Each structure stands twice: as C-alpha cells, then as structure tokens.
Image (cartoon, rainbow, N blue to C red; front, side):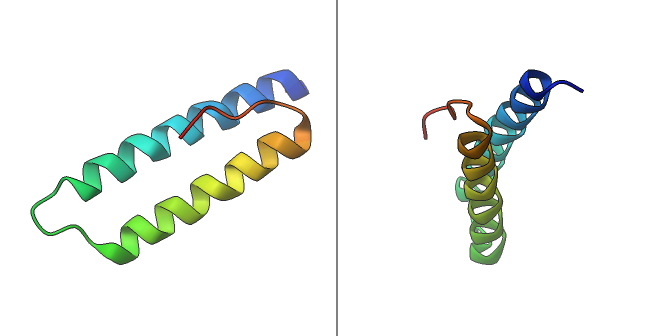
Length: 59
C-alpha cells in the first residue's frame, strides 16, 4: 500500500468515525464513553494523517 493509499484509507476511516459520532449523539440516550472513545480515535487518525503529510477532512 502506497503512502497515498494509506492516507486515503485513513481519511475514509476519519469520515466513518465522524458518522458514528453523529449517530451515537443523536440516539435518545447517547453513551458518553462511546462518544469519547470515537472522538479520541478520530483525533489519533487526524494526527496520523497530518504526520504523513495529508490534509485531514474538516470536523
């Protein structure tokens, strides 16, 4: 996997995590621990994208 492919895969995962965060927060009783975990993972991916020289998606 090239670095460009890796960055694109990370961007896709970043977007997927954003969707999961939105879905969880819109539930009647969102689980704060789940939201926190998803946000933490999303931030880790954003940092990795930045480190690899890609531009993370906004959010």
